[in-house]
Length: 479
Ligand code: SF4
Image 1: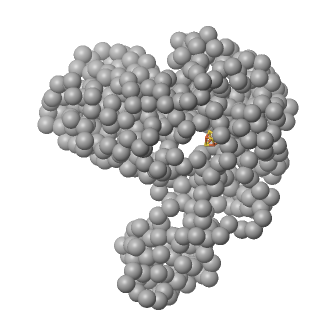
Image 2: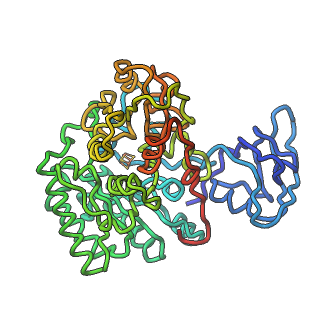
Image 3: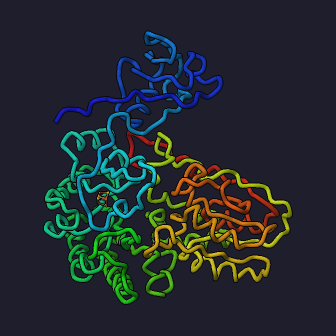
């Protein structure tokens, strides 16, 4: 297969003052046609190119008939000082699967188009932690991943039985594409796996078989996350339904039994069940130490325990926000980092006013005991039901502006309202409403226990820590 054709030149969106780019005359709006004679396909290649000393740039600038040539003087490794507009300059590789459980197929009509992008692109897996099924992975991709050490990657497994996997992806290539997982692991790439567990499809015996298959064929996987499918009220798939309480408990049991097996065979637990399973099963979360450093914290595994530890003052456990279902398609800047999610929050007139914490229905279950432990009667939780998506959607990261407007309209004025930043992307909710559209001023708080604790103890909006706003793209070495 030939290399992907470059269809869009990277567009400069910001230039740092006094940086090499600034001194060379590069400006926001310029399109980078080539860097040292090369046109990067994506921001990974771009990052490698701009690492070089002394760059020759060819740029297209509005108002100029001919491209301009700029010479940048810089040291090797010195930042160029130019931010570009997207992660992938050729085409994002879209998925050719038709999974029954796909949440993108369950979106209401009329949502912005970028949310419907079904990507299955290893580059977005590397840059943003998106899961790829590898059904469109190629020999050339493998060569690049191994050469450039694009690690870690995140792979959707769902089932190790080829027929079940092909049926779940509704793609016959699903039966064979896990051969690439073997090749990646053999090449020393760190890979995290995911099983979206759908009741009646790949739970029960199939899940047992899948975890046995992982131990047998993919024992060097870093982790495997078992997460429940989300079912919105817009789903047209009659076979897809939420887990019952006993089915959720059975998933917890299966995972815990296999943790013991992995622990004795490999010295680590490897497989984890999402927090939602413990909430659905109405069981306490496993102890924090059993999450072995929270490697898939951002996918909802151990998030509650990490939140609790951070709320209690453990700074190391303040692991930040889950990237969210749409993190890579919307509001995610180009170099593989998560954008600042919300604005700084609006000032509140009376810093000693009663405090209301806005949260999703699952979040309320986690936060309830923590808030209660403070013994303060000026703090209350305001759980927001997800009427927008309906179904079993209860995570705070999918709260929408419309639901918040409904709930806040009935809340008193003059109180402090804290909103988790997990539901925002560049200050906007999934339904395109903004924080400014809400009927009460809110303070946007980073979604970790430490930030919430600080906000509760402060007399007003707290500065959002910069940590974790950028996840640097690391090339040439495993992360
Ligand atoms: S692979 Fe992902 S994006 Fe593609 S159909 Fe399945 S769930 Fe949807």
